[in-house]
Length: 179
Image (cartoon, rainbow, N blue to C red):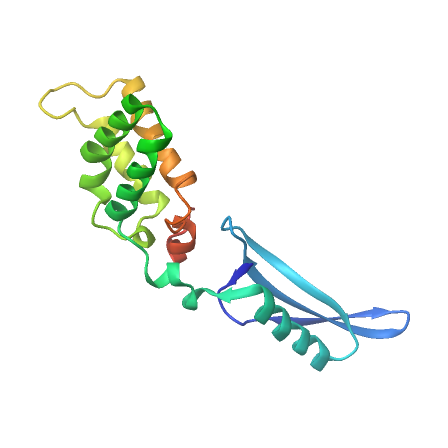
């Protein structure tokens, strides 16, 4: 199943031994968020190519504006709660406690109220750059490199391997997709 952002498509003609054939070309987004060009080819008439395009889109594509994860994208805090609940059962207790601590101290104050579709990779990198240069709370020392690595690594499984009932940030991202 692919996502399609619009019904825009173009026709290309090519010469073959039997004469002229038509191809229809359009763009889709796969389940991992990669935009790909699709081509349906070898139609005798433009009308046949158009008909094949309409049938393909109806069978294999979902218009992004109609996709439920696009309109009902949860906040970072709601998705994080589900993820932490899931993590509690999948990891050792000490790992789950440490992950909850990182989320409550670092991620939720910055991203908690934002819907996932409003968080871009640039936002995350700016936040992390500020974290690297700012002193820790209550001290004048910056975070140690190992601590920074742990903070960064704790959020990676959230964005990559969240439970299936949490919409993918890529599907929610729209124009804020990873850059």
